[in-house]
Each structure stands twice: as C-alpha cells, then as structure tokens.
Image (cartoon, rainbow, N blue to C red):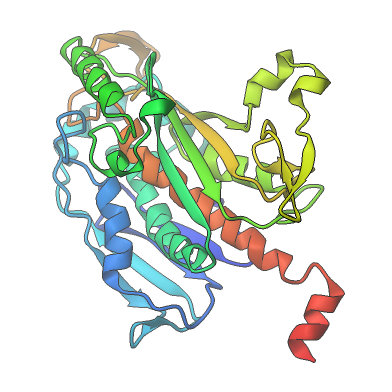
Length: 365
C-alpha cells in the first residue's frame, strides 16, 4: 500500500492498524534543537483519545505515546523521530461478523475492490485510529510554530444545525466542553441533540473551523503547491472529512466581485485588509491576515439502526452493526484537523526559506 506519507521538507509516515499491536508515525526532516518532552505530545493525543465524555465511544484507550528515536537530552536531533502508541482495548470479536459483508459508509467494499483482501477489524488503515500518528506529528509542528508567534486554533463550529454564537466565543471552552465548542450554550444544545441521535441509534456530523494567526505574507507557492491547495489535501485526507472551505468558501459563488474582494489599506505603516473574505490566502500564498479554514465532517457511519447492504455472496441483507462507536466524530477530530494544518503550514514555511536568493546569501555569507 502506497500513500501513507505526506510532506515535502518535513515528511510524515503513519503506520499501524486499529486492531494491531500499535500505531504511530515517523517524522523525517524535523529541524534539530527544539526542546521536546513526552508531555508536549501527550496533551495533543489526550484531546483525541476515546472515552472522555458521554458523546464519544466508551472504548477506553490510554493512548500513551512512546518516543523511540530522534530525541536526545530533551531536544530534537534532526534524525527521524518515531512515535508509537500501543493499542490496549481491542475487541476484534466485535468485528468478526462484518468480514462477510460491506458496511454502508465504510471503505469495506473499496478495499476489497482494490486489494481483494482487507483487515475487517475496525477498518484497519481506514480506521479513525490512524489519526493518532497525525496528531503526534502535529504536536511538534504546533510547538515550533508557536515559537514563531503563530497559533493554530481549531474548534467545533456546528453540530447538525446547532451553530455557535460568535458573540459568546470563549476560547477556554474549547478544551472544557464535550463538543469542543467555544460557546457553552451551543454546547449544551448540541450535547442534547447528540444524545437524542444516540437514543435513535443514529449519528450526526458537523463543521470544524480553524483560525491560524501570525502567519507572515508570502507563504505557499502560486501553482501546484498553493497553500490553500496543500491545506485542502491534508484535511481531505482525514477519513471523515467530505468538504473543505477557505475564507467565505462556497458563499463566494453568489457574491459579486465588489463584495468578495478584500480592500487593502495602510494602518500604522503596515499593509492590511479591511475584510478577509479570502481567508488569508491570495493566489495560493498567505497575505498576512488570519487564515480561516472549515472542515465538514460526516456522521459516524457505524450506527445501530438496521441498514441494507450486500454480502460477499452477492445477496441483499439487513445488518445491525455492533461495537463501541462514537455517535459523533467531530469533537475528537478537532485536534486532528488542527494538527494537519500545523504540519502543512510548517512544511510550507520551510520551503519559503529558499524562495529568495538574497535570503540564502545572507544566511551563508
């Protein structure tokens, strides 16, 4: 299987299956000399691990990370960094039945079509647990970005038709609420809605919004490696994501040019924009304003309701999926989206260091 690696200057390769011994990531090309402790990585992983609230799967996984290489005396060495998380709560018997049929909304049929073989225990590589490696890698990238004054903040914007009120936005609530919403009132309504869906043996999706602050202008490339294109690829590679928006997103299709264009102005001898419909990216390059991105997350496909499908014998059957599943993926996916944004941005910023001859000459002169 190809396609488990991503990146240009910093490359991440995730490995492992949801019901295998362990999962993790190898990070190649990360700069040497950054101070790093296990706790820096673990606090990110704790945000995505299961069993933390009433609206997530009750599967209990400690998701404790081990650093196997690339760190010495508390600093990155510049060599490949290998991070591993052991699986401790597998119930493979919960999945033995699905070996004979294709679950709606899952990759069972497409895996069989491609490989004529699949790991049916929780989905194998297509499981949400694959994102452990992404989050572990993202924690390093976020820390290095923060030392440059850049912050990447992701949160739940909406669940079903329940949306946050930006007038009630409190960033401290993102790590406190069950939904990862910054609006406590919207969180209460969303939790009630998710629990209703659970009682109905159903699931629900939502939208994750990301705001990246402090990015200088000129990050990204103008053709195939546009910053927005790279961000979209990274986010769309997350299994539950079905759409990505930058700035006003699909709303630009009903706007006029005069409405959509962001006017420039000088404020305190600094070029800024009066509005930010573009979401901080123009022509594939950052423009110095906040980068705004949204990821649209589908409902959890594993639900307890009766569903119609086909088995390997070509027979129409009715199934009822067993196991411990999230009624909603969104809250645990927030840190995954945040991590992929941090990784993509840092990779692009390293590329930017060689974009101008004068900077290379200054560095080596």
